[in-house]
Length: 204
Length: 204
Image 1: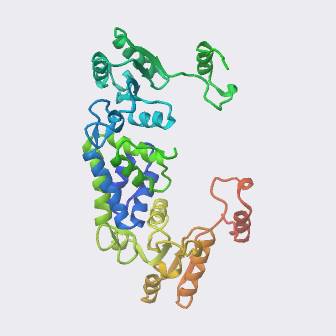
Image 2: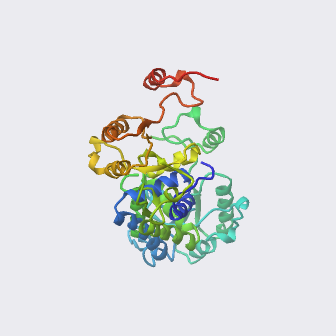
């Protein structure tokens, strides 16, 4: 669809806006827009208003940068969680992913990205000083670095490790290896290689 | 992702709203929402406002039901087009699809759907009376039925044909056959069968 002519400027405008969402092409954007036209007006308005409210009212947790509706997020105010254990993640989506495993009872620190010279993101663009500050204030036993297993993630891990190395805490990263349910045959060689180097003692 | 816990009610609300768009699951909805958080506030607000404006201000062409910003659509007010030739389509998206071919210089009539007893859509739910009215008023030479080649489309074609049969006009449907560039081998037997029955005389 090159140089599509839209019957209405309002439609064209909306298609352009939807098109900016990740993974949404012009055809999909048009489908979304025309869907809103078919829906009840109240439903369509709800989407618009939800976006405006979300962007205007959602706030960041003062401690961990997770998003929340107040000053502190639900995880940081939860006294049943282990506040001596910090899991460092890239984004809010990663907090939700780790929470869904139900395997982690500590608290989080959301960096807001990873070091990526290709995209012009340096350490100064991430919320690493606040993490160092939290560790410096004491009361932390361990920091788990749960970043993506790629160049950027590894660089960021190394950078944070160096910043935190002088404090008397454990620093760990999440295990990388062959995914549960995957066949060895289809694992890429780097992952398989790492999972051999970092093998775990078998015990019953 | 069953029973995902969202860190913020505003986020959960927005994910639910995005989730109502066609083909958008909860994971994609979350991705959209978190993308809006990363963007500049003005950009995110633009999407919300575009939706509200679109739904509140866009109108339907008084003649053909195409969407437009005024009382009549650009196609209906264009005097260079052939107003004696009406192409009947299901939706606004279909108008845009036919327009993109640059093969049609007539005007349109948007039904707003097709007859589909499965989905509870009967002839009364479609804008067929207005089409009959346009034909009855005279000045029309031909009505092209450009509906999807499926049960619902064929039923709707037949229904409209019967309504218009008494008027002195040509009624045609778009050709169904093997798509351009497709190999015969992969065409389904119904399509291939129809393309043989409705064969066209070869001429140079």
